[in-house]
Amino acid sequence: MIRLCRVNKRFYPGEAREVHALRDIDLSIQEGEFAVITGPSGCGKTTLLNAIGLLDSISSGEIWLDERLISALGEHEKSDLRRDRMGFVFQAYNLVPVLSARENIALIMQLRGFKPQQIEARVAEVAQMLQIEHKLDALPARLSGGEQQRVAVARAVAAKPSVILADEPTANLDSHNAALLMRMMRRLNEEEGITVLFSSHDDDVINAAKRIIRLKDGALC
Amino acid sequence: MFSLVLKIALKSAFIRPLRSFLTVLMIALSMSVMITLEGFYDGMVQSMTQSVIRSQSGDLSLFAKGYRLHGQIDYRIEEAKALTQSLREHPQVDAAVMRLEAQGLAQTAHKASGATLIGIDVLAEERFGGFSEFVVDGTLDSLSHGAAIGSALAKRLKVRIGSKVVLSVVDQERTIQSIALRIKAVVRTSNIARDERALFVDYPVAAALLGVSPESATQIALRCTEPHALQTHPDLRALESVRFEALHPQLAQMRTLTDLFNTLSFGIVMSVVFIGILGTMYVSVLERIREFGMLLCIGYGFGRLCAQVLFEALALSLAGFALGALLSFGLLLYLYVYGLDLSAFAQGLERFGLFSVLYAPLDPGYFLSTLYAVIGAASLSVIAPLRRIAKLTPVEVLKEYP
Image (cartoon, rainbow over all chains, first blue to last red; front, side, top):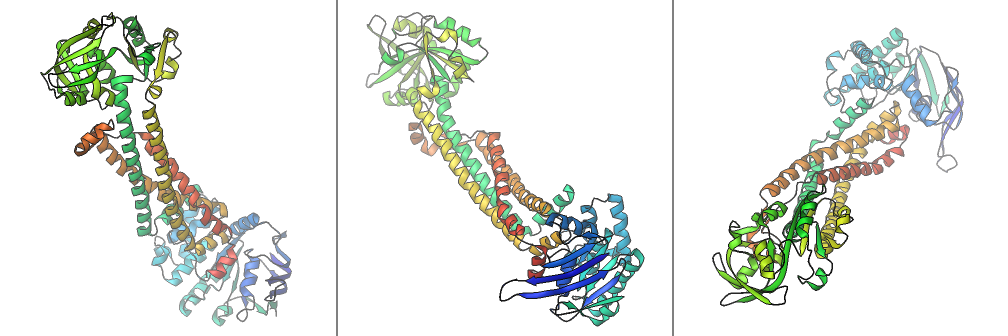
């Protein structure tokens, strides 16, 4: 499903401060996988996720999604692809503060032009799966960190993307909420068949993954 | 899709209520002060020009050729009555009056002053310019047995209602003719030329005194919407037709000057409004960089972000406009109905040809032009914040604003 071929990423190329963040990454993620990218701080976890999510360009190599070379797309096409095929969960939740939980969850579905009835039904469904159905009318500021992150996950999965990319989704959560979130994400993976790729350096979270991808100094190990 | 962007924009525009309120208030106050001043200045100029148009020149004046140069009754329009009647039937003419004017000397037992004899038809003058509204003392009912006198002339001659004035003029035969006139009314037109010199008498009396036919006139004044078009009328070719602006260039200049002043004030106020909205929008965008970065990450698109920021600026600006329009409408309505009473400065104002109570017009154009300007200022004010967003890449935002 996702294939990376000799992907390299260099920051500040040609300068004294050049950093070789990803080194010849060859990686395949199959449909329905529940995989974690782990490694020490600064090993390139976030850079790799950003590259796969087309949030950052790569210096060399190729990234394929379902037999389509996506690393060479233009910015506008990348934006459309992110909207239509990918779901993102950020460490800092990043919900739209003026929209309620319901409106945040519905956001990507609305961007993709789903019908209101479809949106309503799907929002209710994912809210129930993530146990936030009683918080749907609350603004993000009224939600706890755990609840905000579940709303962020709900937003990411609501439009049924091909893959969810989550960068340290549990980093700001306590162990109880982190475990709860991982259980829910795994359930979504199993019940909805959504591919989940996330990064973490938390052992409990890593152990919840079906596949562990280890990075060290920007290279797979 | 449009509704989603609009919803986020409207909610975001007022997410900081105090800041939004202050921005709206700034726009509203600037706008209301500007519109009120604009109305006030326009009212002043209109007061001056209208008093001259109503009491003297009309929008278009007709004279026999040579009259304006020599100022003598020899140069008069002979068939003035018939021409005036026919002009009243013209679809572009709202009202027409004929007048008979001659320079003379007004005297009492103690005082004498140069004066202008003006023969008028009171009813026609009433239709033409609401002549009775100029009367500050006495009545026009029995003008055939007396005269109405300009307020400044009355003051100079120290006459009042019931006083007698002897008016001497040179008639058509170059003979000095005199008539004793009892003052029936004192008029204040705020037209300096009229107030300082005019002695209005009934038309037949003036014609008889000057020894000319009552069918003739020295001036025909017209109220019309398009004087320029009328100037080409075939019946008027033998006459000299002069528009108000040409007859009173100083007033036309004053109108131009006021327009310029209003335009300058408008520009300055709108610049302040622009800077105000720009500041608010820039701060608003800067403090929400992370939100915008996230929206770019999930494929919201730069186009939608532009529309969202523009809608936010428009929401704030239009709220300010609505409040400002309400405030300025209230102020203008007050000035339109009651006017600004400057009686304490009446003497000074009179010298400038102004009434002591100044009224402002209620012109929808003030609001429309301000609306356009506010929309323009709001649209321009988002360019700098949007340029800031355009420089962002999602990954930069996630790194720099975690």
